[in-house]
Image 1 (cartoon, rainbow, N blue to C red):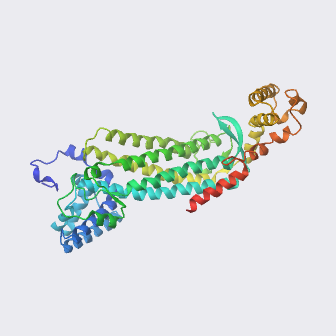
Image 2 (cartoon, rainbow, N blue to C red; image 1 turned 120 degrees about the vertical axis):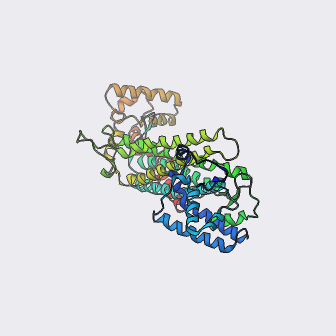
Length: 458
């Protein structure tokens, strides 16, 4: 039999079964991790005297040679060898002879593949943390330039109160900060070592799992072999965090699509992040944020897919678990692409201050401040709210805004109004007086940016 496990079988694997069950088309991404795990495993086998050190050295040399081939893209992975583990082991035996077969002593593909994925996610999670920080740095860069730039703040996509544009941008900084903290925290679970658990029950060989953990840099060893080979919580957690990250990317992308529309014109995206129309030459389409928004569905789908795979599985390993990898790889690629595009898109966008200011001058987003003004004069808030409602209705019917009304018009609604009402209604004043911690006042925004920079410097 050509299969490394074929001794028990009397027939070759059906070709369709072979193609359907093989995972090498996607798990070849784990080649470097598989070799790293094997290097640590064989080092331990030699040190423990389970195999001769001479054999261990020969196997390590063979693995290093295969790694060079993988790095140079010189390896042709074969479907008939099923997965990355069997492909590399077969290459090893071809390269150094039967001694290569000793590599698999004291382990199973079950604990081997779990180890590969822990190693892979540890690397990718660390890289994604850095990419998030690049986006955060881009947000801080724009925020510093626009502490005093005012933009309508919205609730229900209706203008609510004017805010600093920097304050609006920094809201996304803190979303991504939580995302980053979730990724950092997830590394605690990623950094568990499954290797040494065997197929499900451990091994009869006197292995040293602590030594393997030391070589590979794992902080914790799975204390239960059945849990070790069947656990995919660490992937679920990554897919969950990835989905939340994509949610935040999608929300910001939606804002960019809206802000760059003809109806808003608050920002203009750099030409390098937009495309045109094949028949309408005047168009400048925000394709990148639209696609970032659209790709969020992929991340959600990958999470739901793995949850569905796992929900009915008994212990320990089942072939269903082969379905854990493609979604994980896809979410990694989606996040990497999205974050790498988002940072420069933020850095290069043009902010149209005058358009934003005009929008604030032509709305009623300062109405709440009139209510606060009357409350300070002694009027109960509910009565003040009713007065302001009538003033706004009057202004709309008169085709005016609040700063357009005369002092006499204000006094017709309440004798509590004084000439200082115009100072109260000035957009800069409306923003400046919201000076509570976390508020939109320039002083608070500047402090918030300092806090954010401190987060990035840790």
